[in-house]
Image (cartoon, rainbow, N blue to C red; front, side, top):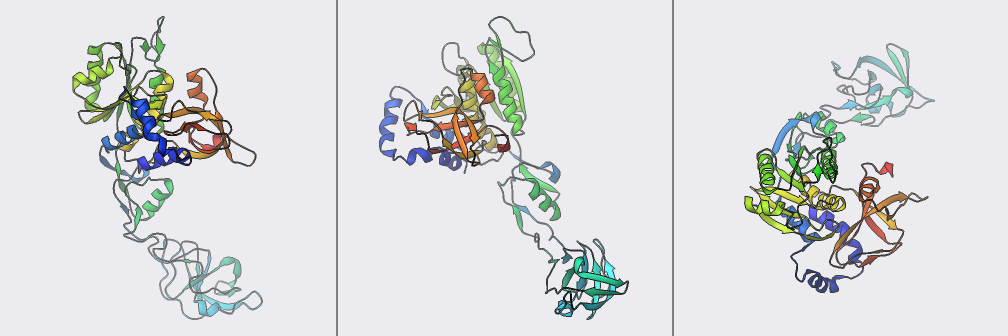
Length: 443
């Protein structure tokens, strides 16, 4: 499901232009002399090499936004008996069949019943029982006349000024949910409305996928943890903060640290995190030069590299593999490459470990306001963009232009993708756009 969602989004435009005939030739051209994998292949490889980290059972009120690990089945029916949907009078429908404002029907009030109580006895012909919303329907009654059509002339008498067929204003037992019915299937997300329904159905605890625990390690002599002293030539580890913030927005717990460009130190830092987490992200030192030590260190620790370098821009330097059966994502250090590698490959993989089957970024369709050209047909290219609405309320999208990469990461509210097999997009095309802000109302 995860792969289908993502690939459906980012192949639509290209496939509409009959690109398949040239794909194989283009891929061969770009792959010659390299071991780069395509973005879609990399996405599939991540999806096939990660798995849910486990299941836990937690109270219902702590489950909002979580993913169900097994079918959530109603324990009881709700309501447990027929109940009134209105304040009014419970009647036999045949007694009020001819009732109207001009010709009201006079009935004897046999008693009253409220929510949480029960009427003792049975409603006989010519009688009515006063009820409130949520009260159980008395035995013998089959309809409720709303109070606005009833006139109590005395404590013992009421005039009914409207008819009510069998079942009027009555919620039948099990009308909301029946015992044994599946409320949310395994893999479904728990939104507040479902949690309320589950509570009504007698469920108090839910079996859900556990969220993975993640370590994020910044690598580089020049990288300094925020708050520490900054020396000439050094910079604060902004990538770590951005990644941690994204993880926190999906309620994924993480720990962060910074380590020097030293193989022994990198090895020690990775080993210190391994026992307590389910996945590791590194930031920087992933490209493969003599100063990029992360991959070599992981090789020495016996990890299994799945891929290194992806035909994706920015973010091509990403590596992914398994170490002690735990996923490790080695992200490039440049802010733009770091962000894109994380959002497009690492974050979907991490969320899949928590039972997710969707891409983490909401996608909407928008009209492109300018021509866009990609670097090569065999590459997938993501571009910072600004999503907005026109006067008709329709989405439009244009490139976000700022030479500062950190400013772009902070201010661009969306991403446009030129997918593999597509050379360019044209102004006026309706394209899928990934949204980077939490609420569409903010656009």
